[in-house]
Image 1: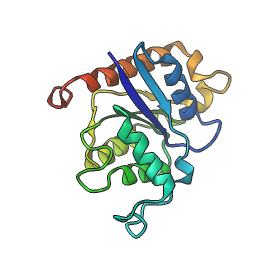
Image 2: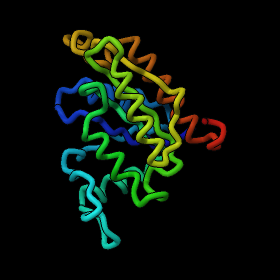
Image 3: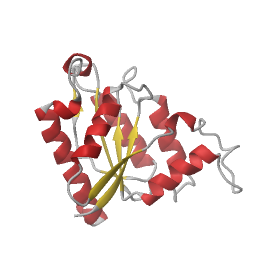
Image 4: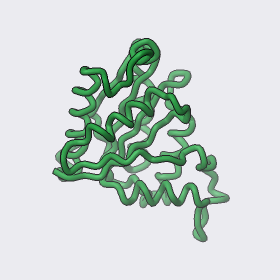
Length: 189
């Protein structure tokens, strides 16, 4: 099994639990699997067709598209902001959805996981991110789930990489995503 997974984190905060979860994923990647934590979502301008032209896109957006195009799969880490995904993650999906019908997410396996303060671990945000990625043309891995509730308390004194339950769940997610890379599109629907 081999796969290159691009990790996009929906929180820009340096101490974000979702960033920590993505960092843990980098370290837990099974043999043959690489998880690349993408840096630079803060620099990507809000999507605007006036600046996304045939002549090119802004440099930060072009870098994001190239990173996603080079990856075998994408793993989205999302907190929940006001019952949905953060604008920075939605913006990344918008840029990756273009050009329409041929964006960097087209037919690419995409999974969504995350941690949030609430009792459902950001389930609403994850649902919205899955929906947006699917509309953007991704092959959304609906059965791949990991929602970690109570993150502010749970990770107040510990990093997610030190939580046995998180390690087990995250390891399973990474294996499922890597398996989806190798599987035909109709086998993972």
